[in-house]
Length: 63
Image (cartoon, rainbow, N blue to C red):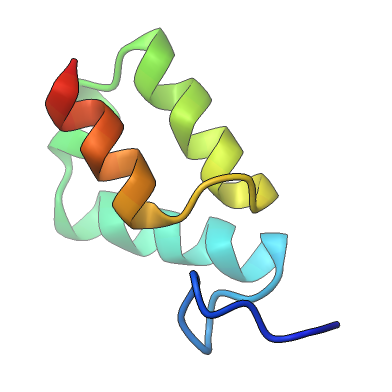
């Protein structure tokens, strides 16, 4: 697996990104409790490695 600079060193695999998302949702509960369908789809794309977290935030902020 090649290193992808869009993700941090502990978020290189889907499992690691899922864990990062889980930690973010614990620290910032509104990310989970107020997540719309489109937000949940963005989260899934982050976990899949299609989007960086910065891309997710930009998309959420634009909505």
